[in-house]
Length: 235
Image (tube, rainbow, N blue to C red; front, side, top):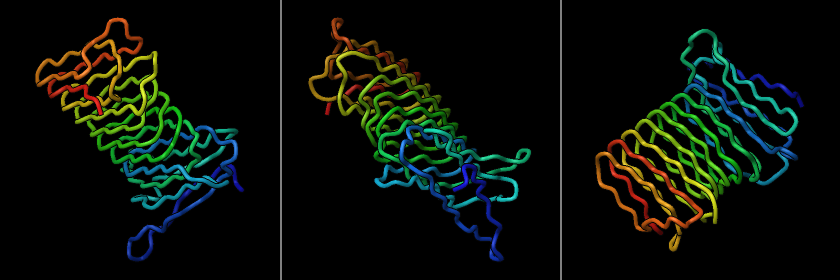
């Protein structure tokens, strides 16, 4: 199996893109990084000995190449473009459940399902939806709708604009959630009975905190909203 895969396909006579799929050994794979300018990125946790990368669309295959390489315990997937080509690439990625994710996407949609581990991402605009078990989250978006479910550890998230929902499946005894939203409605969902040391600021919009604030709590929530509602709710 080639360690370096350059995925490219020619346009068919009708202008359709021929999907290309390659697999990598999933044994010992602990980290996956993705860099994409524009398009849909779908990541699903899957059992088995293979990690599969499928490119389902590439609007300019001669100008936009997709490199996929496993080196040690890391699988890297990166779109390379010539000049300022408008690369739109859709990809579907199947990975082991226990894996760290590091994503950088310019514009598009990201959907993650079932992974467990650290989640790090940067996104310009679009939508980012993740549902798994994330022991820490570090994210930043420019203008995006963001939903992250299954957080269990420290979180740092900033966005310029967009509606945001962050949901903890369990709250650690000690840790922090730091959150900033320039414009948009924000909802932080925590398990019933959570004890938090809360510092909340909403410059405009409605603010709601169902937990109050316990200065002795070892888990801190620092959240700021420029415009839009800011809610900390139980479930």
